[in-house]
Every structure is written in structure tokens, then in C-alpha cells.
Image (tube, rainbow, N blue to C red; front, side, top):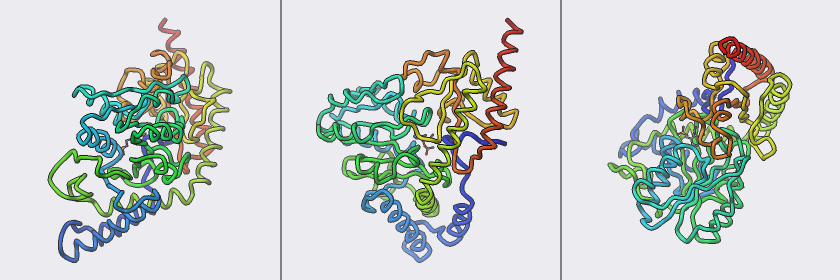
Length: 379
Ligand code: PLP
């Protein structure tokens, strides 16, 4: 199998699995208990909090562990809405569904939400941020999960902060573009997810500089500063913080590696797949994602065909992979519905090889020819 879907998730690193085997054996207690078994787990959790805080350059009491980024993003947006009944929300049109759908939910409850347009490259129209007022919340993702486009987080945050608004940054895909402390320098709320960096699924973290600005979404305990009740899984939080340490220690080498892979893949796509166009090519992009449109091809069919031939890619956001409607991210960029449904995403990690990408593009080219021939035969 050739796996080119790293933006959806990557396999948990062997060293993280080994570490979790140890910590699940030694630190399985309930962190809220009053005995030594609990204390062992609590110690592991608090060390994980300190490590995550260190990477984010915030204090440990700014760290809130969650079940992943989707929950963390909901906690920030809905939690902020509950605490600040008059706040307005500004979210970019190309945010992850965890934000867009939460924004739509807020609209349905009568809240004022502005979906900030993007240009044809997927870059946020920063002039809209001039409209924000004191107490509003602006949400802009660091790196788009479908196109790899890097947003001007610093520029957005500067304008928002000048006007007294707070800023949420979804930093889930940011590993190769920003360090966590570069994100928290600009963000009042910064969200990360373990499984995109080589850790286990089911754990995420939000670095919150203004905890008092959030209300919890669920009730039933005092864990995570009363913002996220429920038994905190110490060994998962430890795995997340350890994964952060490992991923950050090799990020420059890994980023260079992904850049080589991406450049090689794009060259092969240009040479071998007629009617292909890579989205946002002339914009700053993370090296681990390519979004490519292939004329006259139904992406859904291509993805299935590639899977049968041992190549795993996706249409776009993993959360919408079953959808047959065009990607809202591509539509927001002005790409018409037909072209949007002809788009696939290839995404890479530090373990992707040049050989794998060479074979994969060859298989894609063969499948594209076959689909086009079938189409002509049935016309
Ligand atoms: N934000 C972005 C940009 C993502 O790519 C994803 C995952 O696809 C998420 C949020 C949601 O992350 P999680 O799987 O941890 O809920």
C-alpha cells in the first residue's frame, strides 16, 4: 500500500506506541483520585502539561487537553459564545468543518457570524478583519487541510488585536510552517491534534491564554480547569506531548523532505497527467499537501480505483470524504463545482518516499487514462 493521506492522519510512531505501552502499564490510575496509583497518573499528566506548555511557550495552566482538535475548536467557539453573549464571530470560509459547522450552528441560534471570503488562492481577505470590534472572536487556520495554503496569521492577529478582538488559530496542519510558539505569539486560543504529528488519535490540546473567557460545553467534573470534565487520559496526554517533542526536533529535516517529495510529485503530475492543475500553486503552501484538479475526472471514482490499485489518497477533508458535493473550500476559492469534484488531495509525511510518489503518480496517470477511455466509449 502507498499511503498519501498524511493530512488525514498518520500511523502512530513506533516510539510513541512503545512509550504508551509503558505508561498504560505504570500510569493507568484516575488522575482525580487521592491515592498513590492516581498520583502516578496525575504526575504523568502534569509533566505532559508542562511539556506542551513549554512547546507552546505558555504557562501550564493555559493548557487544556481534549479528545482532539474538533472538540477543542468547539470548546473555544461555543464556550466563548456562551461566556460572551454579545460577541460576534469572524471565521474564514475555508476553515475546517469543525469551525464552519460550529459557526453555522451559532447562526442558527441567532448569533452574528461573518464568514470571511478568500481570494482565488485561498488566502483570507484581511480587509474584512477591519470590521471587528472589541470582544469579537476571529478564527483563522494556520494551514489549510485541503490545499496546504498558509494564512497570514500574524497579519490577521495584528488587526484583530488592535481592535480588541481575540484570535483562535486552528494549528492542526501547521507542523512544517509554524512552531507552536509562533502560533501562540499571535493566538489567544491555539489548537493542536496529536494524530497529525505521529501520536495517537483521540487527544488534542488547546493553549488558552484567556481561560476565563470560556464556559464549558459539558458538565460533570472539575477536570481540565472545569472546562473539559471527564477522566483525563494521562497516557494519551503524555503521548501527545512526547509526540510534539519528537516532531519538533526533526521538523526542519522533515519539512525539507516533504518539499522534495512535493516538488517531485508536482513535476511528475505536470509531465504525465494531461489536464491537471495544482491549486494555490503560486501561494505560500505547506510542503505536505497537494490539491490537484484533473479535468473530466470524477474524483470519487478515481479515489476508489486508486485504492483498488494500492494507492491511498483522498478527495479533500477526511471529515467530508463521503460527501459527493464539491468541497466548500474549493468553492470558496471560486473553483466551479465540476472542477471541485475533479480534485484529489495527496499528502505526505516524513516517511513518504520518492519511490512511492513516483509509482503513485504513474498509477494515477493510468487510472485517469482508463476513466477517460471508459467515458469516451460510453458517450
Ligand atoms: N482542523 C484541521 C485543519 C484538520 O485537518 C483536522 C483533521 O482533519 C481537524 C481540525 C480535526 O482534528 P481532530 O481529528 O483531532 O478532531
